[in-house]
Length: 313
Image: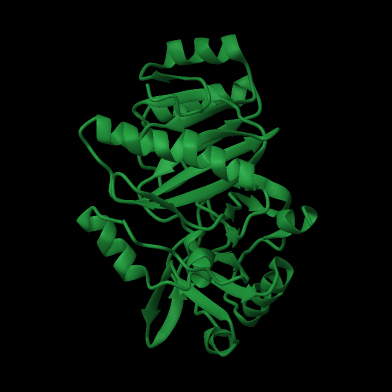
């Protein structure tokens, strides 16, 4: 309706029409649960059989319960993904620094998608030209569209973008900070966050400017073994004090709990180990210095977070 560039798609609540759509368009194709699924309700199907199985699992209620009672089947978009976040009061839009997430669970973007295995900022893939497209075609049209619908949006607007051949398409929106993009972004933000959020809530961002550290930041997610599938909980986490003593490093807790005075893993994504440095390469080294200090039984993490930025020079 508002000409925000995205993939072509159709929505289905019955299995047979959905299977016919898959047969007509063919794989690769994307099957999404039309509801909240903890960041895991998206299947990038490489074959018609895989797509059909995902549809049957979702629409039968086996995969994601009520979240899968409707599915969105859409064009598979190739390219490089980036996260574009902005503050808005419903009129003014203030972009945050660029960032890039790493969704698949294993190195080299292999394995099933997760809620995010790490992120870095800045993201070289977001060139000044891409930034301008994202602001004009995606953020501005969305914020203006929300206002035109009588529902002006205030707060953090997060667009997941796919970038190919200098063109932007929108994968998703979130009405929140991204995890794990938020961690490196806040490590780079010099400005006090609270006045910005308050200005959003009051509906007046005029006069607000964000100051950023020139340095880069990298977050490596340490996850429970088996995530995003089944995993065991309750293992004591060692090395948190040693990591906390490292300069320019923050360990963000996510899936942790305290038992008997010790931290244990209690979720899939357990810690966001985030380092800052003068370059992306230095920030990567800092983050993995923290990761190496921390351990628990079965802990898993990717070893290539931020590598895409290095290959772009």
